[in-house]
Picture 1 (cartoon, rainbow, N blue to C red):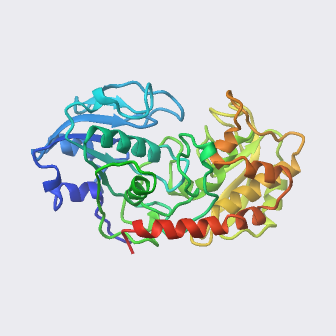
Picture 2: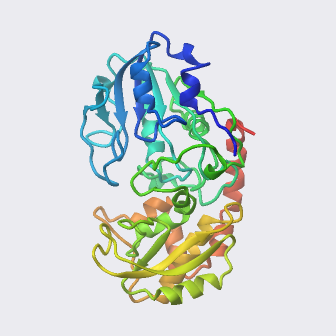
Picture 3: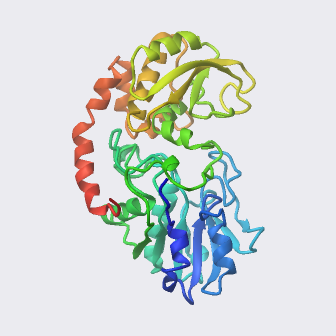
Length: 386
């Protein structure tokens, strides 16, 4: 296993001069911990190097207890007593009052390597706000848990920009949180005085389970690294009337609905011989979310080979199969506002329309090749690890 020194650890050792004597703000949550599971907020609060004057919490809150989409109120941190400003409540970026007295802003949150994870945009909006306020911004780098090589998915169409995708990046972007911060800042003119405290010991080929690091679920429905591996493909079921497994022990690793025959669907998907994955028929009863309290049938993904597995190809193959086999029952979700939830996740309406017209998932995935090659050239300037 690779031994990694995280950015938050290096900040308090060989990078300590960055914070010495400064009044610090920290954007973090429960995932902002070191290899001994000590919270960065607690370590900064206890340190005589600096003064921790403000904390800022993303979606799910500073301690990660709230479910997706739940609005979070500002409060005092129960452990340190430091004021906590919510960045997922009345505002999604810190305002002037929230930034008062802060001399340096730090960011320490674990992401999952997928475009629709909102922590990315909490970071970018805070970078922009700090740029306007003249406050330097430092990202404490962390591994991309699903590796730093593979790219997958379409580039988001800015017409469909939202808090689950603000910039034209692919679904799977293959960058660490520090690398993508640099890309956002330079490519989308955020104007931040940005620096990154890099890790040591992380390689682009590493998945989380190649590392000597504990997994702390960065959000309530991301319980394991297995969840993160499948999430770039199965998250798209959120935009349909198929349960994506929220409210069960295997969110995003299984999906289904009361009208599905799990054995039939598993046979159909296994016949595709999708790389690195097998499908098992399952029954589940969600405790929350879609079909709460109802018996659903569907399939669970079992990924046997991370390197071979293609989450986007798998997710869209599965979605196309469900749409074809259960055409009379399948539906896209159209929440208030009239924009398809699926289109927000996809960053376009073209994928939904292609699936409606029966385009095979293999053709859909192949259609993004040139855009991914262009993004690969763009991101080259921001790669900090071999």
